[in-house]
Every structure is written in structure tokens, then in C-alpha cells.
Length: 504
Ligand code: AMP
Ligand code: MG
Image (cartoon, protein in one colour):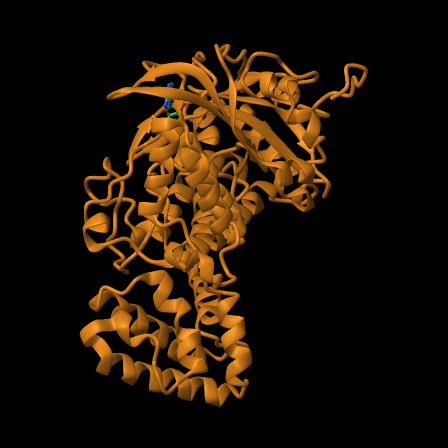
């Protein structure tokens, strides 16, 4: 940026700070003693309509490290509550985060620009308000990988090291993530005000959410029930997409579930390797509440908590409000099932366009039987689907056989049923195989690769493994010989003992 260029780094327009009185606290980020770049997302900056060169300058670094407040920013710590592992905490809030402000991106969409790891706030409780390099880079990598997979998610604009040492079970380098989100409205934001009996603020929040995420509902009678329906539909789609790539969020507390339908808060998340719906990676999820296969049920549970906050807006008669909300919540299961079937049909090359109930049932059974096979023979979820297209291309060799070990005969039986179904569908196998490759990623953030990349960055500030992995997982579908090793699962020992931790 030339010294004469006085254009602001961000063209902020801060509706949350301006229009929602009493829902956040104006606050300033802590200073970083010796900031340096870890990563800057130039493509995202461009998408947000920002000047990437200006942001990548020292002036930009000072802003993204909390040492200068960019023109037009109004940093606030947002209030929210939440059910954590089923227990209600009436006050959580941005204990180590700040919303800097909102910008309108190139597509006309309003996006939050927020910090994570920017120091203590009135919501910090016992915490230090800080984040470490490892968890910040994990969130960066996972979010960008999910985005590349076509899954709605918050994204990372930048990660900077603060030059400060922070203390966890060991001293670590501190860092700040700059996070971009469609909004940071959470189920827990509604719970914060509902728990205080502040129904007027719940109403203002709901109307704000409608204006931001569902503007077509604004003039509608019963708009708050319609908002609940819209959130349920977005979450049904989102969780079905998670299930389609083997993603385990790991900490689906209500404060980590968005109104926008974006994935948020990549703490103890991880991708499945050998398929098992009971898989849990999080070190704090002792009872498997957030296991892979539980995610749809938990999403619905969280949405019921959202519905409770909206009841007084849905109808003045409580029984009527409960009946209406229940009807909407009951639609979550069928909506999820529909999305799940659509996504998984694509994964095995089926066009479920007939819409006849019998066909749906048969396809669902075919898919479930395949998943059962993956489970029984400890087959990697990602490769188990990706390599199916090769089986179609070269029926004689069966490239899937090595994945199934002793399950070869069962696999052959299933493949025969599947081929028959494809034949009935009448699409040429080569076309089906190509379409399947566009629906089944080859490169996901493999747990052992993520750990290696974060270890190098954390230990010696060597960002090369991180950047290499980021480049691989942000092009998940095209097979590249030079990235062959990145497509392989970790060893059984690596996966067996794998544990993820909350980014605290
Ligand atoms: P999370 O696990 O990131 O979803 O955070 C749950 C709650 O704990 C939120 O209210 C956070 O702001 C708060 N929190 C997490 N880590 C810290 C920290 N280091 N300092 C202060 N608050 C924190
Ligand atoms: Mg959170």
C-alpha cells in the first residue's frame, strides 16, 4: 500500500453492533508483541472484495494481529449461551473472539470478519482469551478443506502468530485466526436471551436473522416459525453433507450450531478413516455423544433447543406454539433422509430421479449394505467410495479388492447388485464413473497428515508441510500422481490412538 493510498482495508457496515443493542459488548483486541504471518488467504480476500496487496502489507498484519483497528471496524464480543454436552451454560459468549465488523462480498453477501484468539473479554470466565498456533491452523485447514468439498463453512482469511507465549499443558506460540462467516448467529445466541426471559430481544434477534439469512420470509405471516423451518432445512442439508464425506464435528454444542447453516468451530473435528458410525475422536467426548452416526440426532436435538426459544414468537398460546414447532422439528428426519439419499446416490452413480418410493427404498438398502460392508471389513470410508469408480472402469481387475481383505466374496456380491442397478438406469459406465469422481473426494485432511503439518508449524514454525497439505485438500477431487501418498489412510496404530482436543 502506498503511503498516499488512504482507502480503508475493509468497507465495514456493522449491523450487529449498530442494530442489536444489548447483544454484544464493545471491546478491543489485545496487542500482539511480535506479529508475523502464518498464512494469508488471497483468494478469499479477493472474493470479499478486499485489496489483497494492502492486507498482505505490514499495515494489514498490524490490523490482523490486533495492533491497529482498521478504519470502520467496531469490535464487539458477542453474547451467547449454550448446551455443552447436554448441560446448559447460560453465559458463554465470545471469550476469546471479537466480531470486527461486516463487509459485503463480491456476490453481494454480507460476511462477518472476526478474530479468534484476540485476548480476554467480559465473557472469558477463567480463560486467557488466547489461541495457539496449532488449533488456529487446524481451523484454517479444515475450513478451507470443507469449502473445497462444497460444504457450507466459515472460512479463514488469515492466521498470524502473535509472538506471545501462551500456556496450556506446555508453553505454546499464540496466534489469531481471522474468520469469515455468513454470520456468527448461533442457536446459543437465541438461548442467551430466552434464558433471561428477554423475549423482546429474542424477537429482534429472530428478525435480524431473517433479514440476514432468509429475507424472503420478512413479510410472511408466521415468519418466526418459517425461520425455524429454514434453519432446520439448512442443518439437515449440512449434516447430510458432513455424513457424505465422513466428517465428525466433535463438539456439536448449541453454541457451535449456526443459524446460517455453515459449519463452525473446528475444535476436535476429524474425518473418518475406517468406516464405523460409532467413531469418536474427541478426547472429551467420553460417552460418544457426538459420534459420527449420532450427528443427525444431535442436530435435531439442538434445533429443538432453538425452537424452545422461539415459542413465544410462534403463538401466544403455548400449546399451539408447541404443536407448530413440533411439526417443523418432526420434518427434520425426513429432510435429512432425503438429503442423505441424494448425496449418497451421487456417490455410487445413481440417478434417483424416478422418485418412486420403492426405488428409494431399494437404493437406500443398497447403500446401507455397502456401508455395512465397509464397517465389517474396516474399509477406509473415503477410498471405499472413491475406488468404486475404478471398479466400474475396469471390471476385470477389481481395484477395490485390496481394500476389503477377506471380504472379497461379499464385495463381489454387492458389486453385482450395484452393476445391475446401473444397467437398469441405462447410463454409460464411463460417464457414471466420471460423475462419481466428482462426488467422491480422493484427498481429505487425513488425521496423521494434519498432525504432521501442525507439529511442524507448532514446533519449528515450519509452514511448508501445512501449505503443502492445504494445497492438496483444497483440490480434493482431481487425482494427481504426485499426491498419491496424501490419499492413503494412516496406519492402524495411528488411527486407533487418534485423539483430538478442543482448541482451548
Ligand atoms: P469453544 O470450545 O471454542 O466452542 O468455546 C466454548 C466457550 O469457551 C466459548 O464461550 C469460548 O469463548 C470459551 N473459550 C474457549 N477457550 C477460551 C479461552 N482460551 N479463553 C477464554 N474463553 C475461552
Ligand atoms: Mg464455540
